Length: 113
Length: 113
Image (tube, rainbow over all chains, first blue to last red; front, side, top):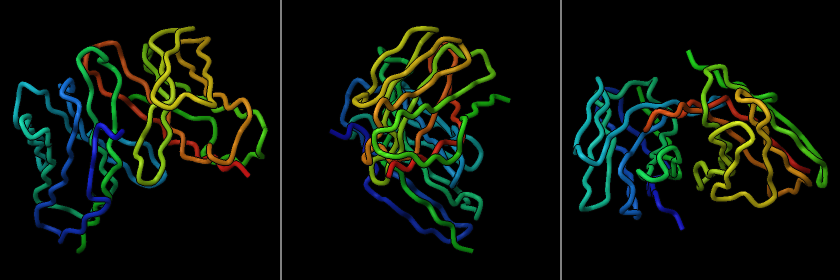
């Protein structure tokens, strides 16, 4: 039973445009959400996070939006750059299991020049 | 900079062999994790540890065991490797502060023939 779902296995975006990656979750106990980025032959690296008390968090070109009623979050990258081409994983954790993360399947983002 | 290292980048083993995957972190982190990454399934937690000699099962512990004799080292053991354990194995560590980021190693790609 996949508690965190990324329904788009891949996404292709033109350089300079906005990339929007989506993530849905089913567990209402999740209260902290993260995005990780992974290049081939490397481990995932932390990108940005959001707590359930917020609906938006911004860090430079990256913004994460959280819609708790819809159990949906999204990552916006503006403007997209070729170096953003990677696999992006959404992850979530419960307050009780504070250090455990549940990951989505990942979305491969390709930025075309 | 946090550094998480894994003993091998690539490993080829035969069915039935005992396999050891080693992970070392240099940040004095209390928490350590083992995941496997498979296409279409994302990262799934195998085992984790909050302290030396302490371990807890993750979502898919069957066929695996772990050992944490020293704080900086967390080993994943495949007692009798099977072909369905062919995967990318990722180790991560984090501190004890609530919501602290997990830092990942580069991964070990294991092929079981």
